[in-house]
Image (cartoon, rainbow, N blue to C red; front, side, top):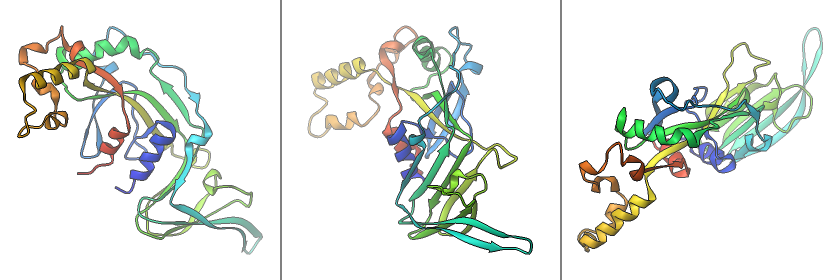
Length: 286
């Protein structure tokens, strides 16, 4: 997947995960699973679960600019002024040329990022757990979107091949990256896998870029300890059945059917932040 480095760096730099395909939107309270590298939304907690504790969100607030301008394996090899002569006038423009080292190398620039967070997660989480695992559904693996970042002005170029190239032209004013200008045009490219420049002030159609944060449903630490103790006590970790096999499987399978019910589910599960492991799953097409 050529987007892997962009996904990884986005999470490492800011803890935000891109919504893919780019331009798609996510909502607070979306419940999803990950299948074949895709975020598959199944329902929305607000619309579909009839929560007693309604989800509340803060007003959007701006995010740090530096988190939304990064690059990997991409070098600016030319930045100069060019003159275009027309019948009526002489136009002076700025031209920048970029070269990408390898597939997945990218150039990313964005501005005006704003975030909305679920501000009462601690009150909503217990009810969500019961309804998603017992009373309405029987999920054993699920994620809930708890924050959304929306970026109206952005540019992203990702290489498909080694030594891919991109040439941009814009207004003559000096710019670290021409993506920041409203009138930015791609004049030449080779070997790109993805390119888009979106600026609401310069385009008719709104196509913001969205990122998200999420909580994932996992086996609780206490139950993990209990199951591990039971495995040791039963001697299941003999050489022919190494305990490591269980650690890489769904430990919840050790629970007897009658043990997990609407009264005990909060002992069995817990919510954790989505991590880089989950980003890996989102970029795995296998």
